[in-house]
Amino acid sequence: MTGTAEERYELIARRLQEVLGADIIKAILAEGRTPKCYWGTAPTGKPHVGYFVPLTKIADFLRAGVENSRHAPSDIHAFLDNLKAPLDLVAQRTKYYKRVLVAAFNSIGVPTNNLKFVEGSSYQLTKEYSLDNFRLCSIVNEHDAKRAGAEVVKQVDSPLLSGLLYPGMQALDEQYLGCDFQFGGVDQRKIFIFAEEFLPRLGYAKRAHLMNTMVPGLGGGKMSASDPNSKIDFLDPPEVVRKKIKSAFCEEGNPDNGVLAFVKAVLMPISQLRLERRRGLDGEEMKQATANQFPLASEDAPEDTLFSVVRPEKFGGSLHYKTYQEIEDDFSKKELHPKDLKGAVADAIISLLAPIQGAYKNDPEWQAVTAAGYPDPNTKPEAKKKKEKMYHPPPPGKGPNAHQAKPDAGASLRQPIAEGDMTDNATKGQ
Image (cartoon, rainbow, N blue to C red; front, side, top):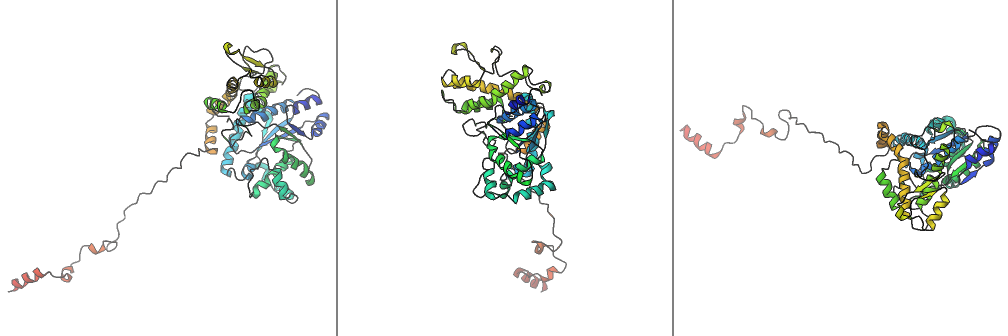
């Protein structure tokens, strides 16, 4: 941690879409105290490459001296969100989230020894938390709860009570995790406003809230863990990455597309982080990276290049960019073709995912957790084996064939005599 309070705040707030309660953070820094951050995610669908946005931002927090950026895998929240996943799957997915996020942190050089992973259920099931939750429920009406979760909780015509509890519990997390500010996507804004309004009414401090931009999906709209066509998973192999990028909407000359948005929100910040790391601006604690920390530029790129698009000389040669705006300008002027941009973006993503996927291949427990937490929906359940029937003969005189049993000694005296037998007997008697 280096720099003045003003410089540290600039590092904390850079590239964010919005900051609520900036004065709270500035006052903590001015007093020489260490601010504490809380970032939570609900382990439902598999994390995708859009998670690189908050992970890169957390690197800024750590460099600014933010204490123990606490990541809370919100297992209870995942269950409450209109039952997106049953509790047994949530438990496995929580383990998956921890592993994939640690690998992703290491890939971009964020030290995980300064991070705390706190499962929501570790404190949300305590007596104290439950009582506070009841207190909160006594002052929040249905309209306020539904409005707060509108951008996060799955919306249905007849919402379950579980989904209405979601925003209030996320607000209470701030108190029970002891944070000074909560960090999340701009889609969390209504929950953050809810927390600022209701926590003081319970006698708790108002926190600051920091929001990063949401990464658009490859086809437009939000990149969602529940939509496989809008996202790239951390474990997607190279051929899948290239196929998804190739099919993404990216009209020539039109900068309003998911590919350029991904470059701006994900690739350029990571490349800038790497460039600063190579200049030694982030201190000794940032040297745990499992991937090379060169910017996403070619070896022959000019100094300070953050992103390169490698092209043959017959097509004008490679292009090198120091800012995102330069990339967008060239694309708008049709000096950067969508095919060339897509190829460079796919190469960059594959390079970022390689160390993560390498860690996965070398971790049998992670593989087992993945199979348990995200079972293949196309796999048919094993048919139950039918029990072989064992023949047990009935006791004597019982069963369907009892009348065919061996006759007793006097049976012949009771049997009817055929007509021919009567004649023969009569003749023998003469």
